[in-house]
View 1 (cartoon, rainbow, N blue to C red):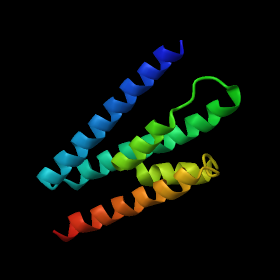
View 2 (view 1 turned 180 degrees about the vertical axis):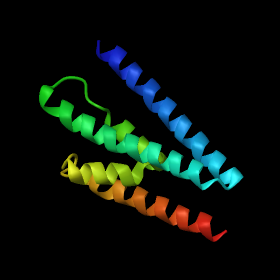
View 3 (view 1 turned 120 degrees about the vertical axis):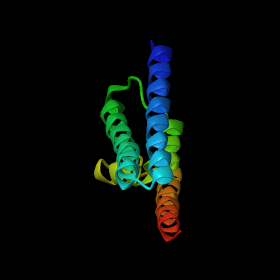
Length: 119
């Protein structure tokens, strides 16, 4: 049962990341602000959802969202959503790795946005 849930989670994660990045790259290539916004909202909304879902699953001692998935989604464009979800739901706030890496991912993504707009 656990392996089936993990495989389903990985498939959904990879699908959402692919769709988000297609939107981001398409928006950047065509200079379409709405595509960029849609990709950013999708990635950050998904990171928010993963934090919320993992917090909800924590007391049940059932399937949990792997920490690697939380980091991957935060690194690949969902840093702001992951940080917001982490702070709002007070999830993973005692883990030093999350307290250090998630804000770094946010800062890097904001700097990337600033650099892309200056070109």
